[in-house]
Picture 1 (spheres, rainbow, N blue to C red):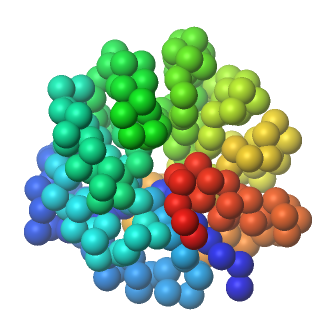
Picture 2 (picture 1 turned 45 degrees about the vertical axis):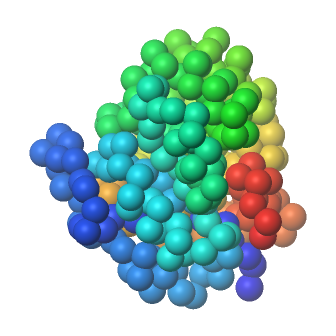
Length: 250
């Protein structure tokens, strides 16, 4: 069975703080729930991503990474005022990126994107991840192209700015092949266009538990990738691209 690095999923544990964002409270989805749901998928590692509803809380993430083991890393949300020592501490437990949630909030304001991206990269080799509708990418492009490492969630969500997304992909920015039930375009064609622009760009993620998605993750989403591309490209999308990007050992 093909190895999979799940580059985007959430752990939601009611033992830890949750923000009430947009009057929404997510259903619980613990580490045990994740392990049970993915038991037959040959997940060899992954990225636990902080959601808008988790704000700047790090306690849930520390617990999740400890439970999942060293092949899993964290993508957190941090205030611009975070200290160097806190970043180093988070790096030691496996955090590798900071998320800017421009779609739903809960993260730092985008005005801090450039300074934070450069700071965390210089200090710990981290990158930034953006949850953003691609319709807004044109205005962000001049900034994004100056940053050392960037990825964009959920295929950019909309067709409105897909050509701008492709231009960024050509310049080395990564894209999460996640949230297939969230987008408003033909997924197969989008995947092919991104791979054509840069075969190292796509990184598969389950997006579990698919909070607020019109259609949640299905195992068939993995089959879609495997049926669309040859074995080499499928392995890159499902495993290798993310392993290289997140600097994991698996």
